Length: 79
Image (cartoon, rainbow, N blue to C red; front, side):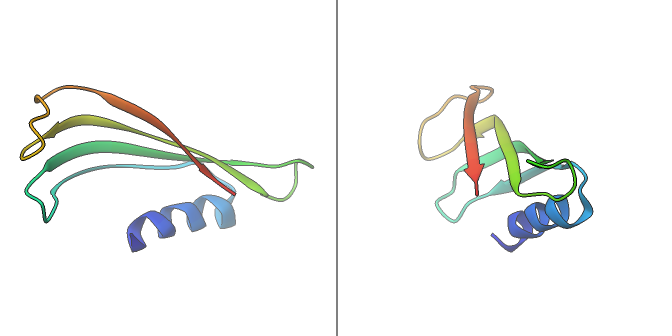
């Protein structure tokens, strides 16, 4: 989404970690509550050339049948 791209761009351009929490219902009817983190990294200690990103789904429920409160952790690699 545009918001996620803005988060990643801010982490890279500002050379600072960025995070947010969100809660929304997808068009499929599935409800999500999650947290996102983007950490800027550098090979030379000066310019950002990598982002280490992760997210945690705190709650996911709805049409998929996933129980409320079930956690799903997945890494996200952006180069």
